[in-house]
Amino acid sequence: MVKRVRIYPDPILRERTRPVKGFSEEVKRLAQDLVDTMFHYEGLGLSANQIGSTLRMTAIYRGEFTGLENDAQVLVNPEVVYHEGEEEDEEGCLSFPNLYITVKRPFLVVVNALELREEELVPVEITATGLYARVLQHEIDHLNGILFIDYLSPRERAAKLREWKERLREGLSV
Image (cartoon, rainbow, N blue to C red; front, top):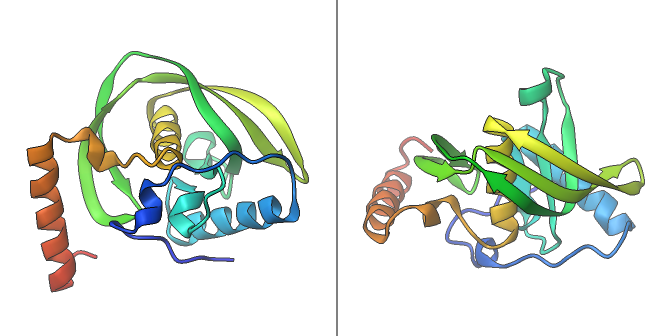
């Protein structure tokens, strides 16, 4: 089911999510809601707190990387266990409609997680580079209550948020 995406400064976006203990109907339902909502809003990823849940789960749109339409991956309890390199690139976020900023992140990451497959949580180790690595890091940050604006200096962050909120008030570009 498509859910409402929480928009900054909704306090749940700053909450650290809690680990999932095992497969349940709640996990299955949340996974479907994450995927449905991510596809509806055409995001590359979506984390549980962005739709109001405090469970440590995220959906990633892999079609951008695999070329397969509707290729979604649901990760449970993901953690970055290794990273290297560095690159800057522009990011957006469904919780900040039409705000794009340049963020410096590691180029390569290794993520350990449980992947939801049918009604089973399967341990996976994902080695990702480039955009896939960036999306994984962005969504895992969400699960830790970290937002992409946190990578800006306090002065830059204040200026970007002021400009973004003004556009929201005026109803422009949103």
